[in-house]
Amino acid sequence: MSIKVIGIDLGKSIFHLVAHDQFGKIEFRKKLSRQKLKEFLSNHPLTTIAFEACGGAHWLGRYCQQVGHRVKLIPPQYVRPYVKGNKNDFIDADAIAEASGRPSMRFVEVKSESAQVISAIHRIRSGYIKERTACMSRIGALLLEFGVSLPRGHATMKRLFTWLATQRQSLPPLLMDELLSVHEHYTELCTRIKQQDDKLLRLVADHPNGCLLKSIPGVGDMTASQCLADLGSVQQFKNGRNLAAWLGLVPRQHSTGGKHTLLGISKRGNKHLRTLFIHGARAILSKPDKTGAPFGDWLIRLRKEKPFNVACVALANKLARIAWAVLYYQQPFNAAMLQSEPA
Image 1: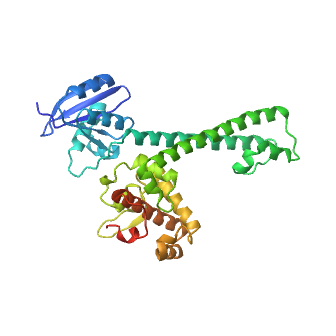
Image 2: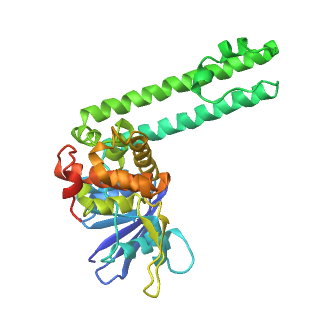
Image 3: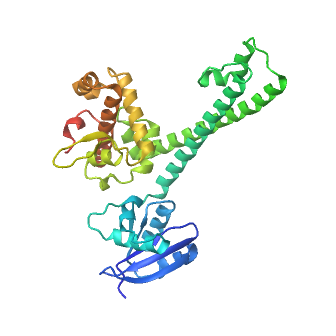
């Protein structure tokens, strides 16, 4: 029995395996628990292991590499066309094995453990921010029910009771007790967000690529840390344009009959990293004379000819391409990179 590839349909506790030989014929099907899967992979002759890039995939990818197998992570949307007939776990595993053998298939790089830790810190921070926003909305809604309109923003929220003391509207004592409890939760969330920020700052400062990324205008600790978590090795991208396309910062195309039609940006890839690059571009465009100086006349013409949001996306595209060049050549940003980036 010659196994060319084993496709695995991932689950929380149960994993379904389908093995293909060099002709694409199914050699075996297996249904294994997590522990049994680890034992199977450790004892099986070295081969190619393929599965979708979903929850738990990077951990399993690192384990497969540790025991010597070759790993292929496939975006789930690229596996769907190979699902034949009705959907079940073995059919999905068979489709994964078949898709992994296509010469034009695109794969995802296995993340390192440190990159996943940084990503986890970002996700927890985002969760705290959502909770804090909900907490602020809750306080505003409660006050509005009693005829008090609370101004937006953290400035008033942080000194909530001082601000309430200046209002002529009297509030029930029991309501004030409830507001105190909710405001304590808001304060605790602010503290936790600050702790997450400090963790990311330390990680970026200790990582050599973090300092390189921060040399780019508009790229701060949040963007740099998200790059460290999500980009992995930039060798997987042929050039900066490919990275910008992976982030969804290029026009979406709908062309037919030789007529080329370009639409808005594709918004593919990593949403959080794309958002951070766009925020960085907004920061540059807010002070083009200072932070935008390295971009010279290109940025001035762009701002004059294009609407603000279009200019932001175009600049974010350029920032992503610069980030690729900085990481690829392992050199801090300098204005000469804007002219020397390969096509």
